[in-house]
Image (cartoon, rainbow, N blue to C red):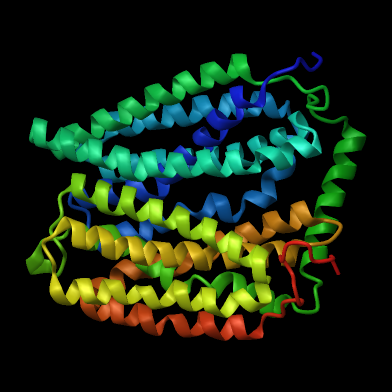
Length: 428
């Protein structure tokens, strides 16, 4: 079927909102769900960190999206799959073996979500001309961020409000997941109608073309690891967020745990406001400012100030663990400071990935970078819960400050061309 003119505003906002929701459900809501239902910090951090794996190995199965079916079909089918897995989470929460059952459903959701990322990003490039891709890149990012705020803020607040009405955390989260499942089914139905049908979105390849594609994929993959600076690049990708990878898994448990356990004793609804809405909004603003700063002065000049602004605000968690403030406004402000700095520093990390991927195979090499980025979050996160339970919250947050040293070391080794990322600079 040939392409038909479609206003990009009819599908890009909903497509990237749909891309963001399952990621935030798997990475963030799962942590809060398990904390609310009494799972230990050790098990939460270990098992939810494993859920990063589909994003780690995503580049390895990306050729399958090219080989079978159209990207449009992949998008709609995977959205229905995400909706079904959300419904299955809701069905299994009330059961006695809910932890294993919901983890299995989160695994399915993670693989469907990672595959949806491949199909959606590829479809975006096929459905829009190059100037249209550039014009809507900010729209993509905005609606992805809105999905994160809606999930980490709105859905967490909804779970807390429902718990206050029903008196049951299980019932509250069950209702939340049914709501999100229904929303995803509606989004999939909408996209089955609203997505354009680009002529370039073909139904897979013939056997000869498939063979060429697979051989080219492995050739491009191997080229990434033949870089002369590959050891520094991999060290940087894996260690830049080493402290944040550990902190991220324990931030919400710390906010939810009672005072006698070293936490702040916030309600689930308060966490939705303080961390999921105020904090995430500050993260978004930090990212926007980071992009503006790099465009003004270039990545080389901005990198060290941005990594300092990223790591120093981790002191916020040390101070919160020392003082245990009861004011939601004060806690929200502290989290906003920490998240704003993280947003700034993460922008520099993304720009280094763009630099590393630059060249004739930039799309494939950037995908490999994102896999190592996910691996850098997965491995430290796995042991962070056990470490926190051995040390307690205050010593753990002090350890997070010490854990910034590998990040600083790899930043010192990475080489940035002068004026890279600066607006108006001539590419090397």
